Length: 98
Image (cartoon, rainbow, N blue to C red; front, side, top):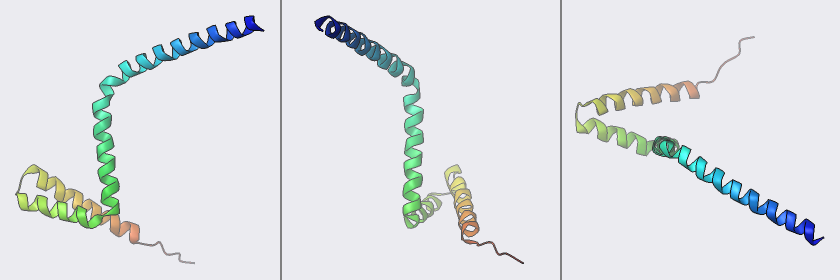
């Protein structure tokens, strides 16, 4: 029985060492993706907040318009128009004609 336990302990130690090596390798390979994934995560967070609070989104867009005619305000206007179109299409209910 002790011999089987010793084999199990050695196997477990080997598997733990292998898992540590794999974690280190995965971390090394994921390092270049850390910044792009962080930016994407931040963008998704902003989108979720905008869905929960459209008034804050509107205030932010209006603030961008007050900043001037830069590229940012142009894109903000386009985004606002797109959002309005999306909302109007979403609220529209299809009618069946039989």
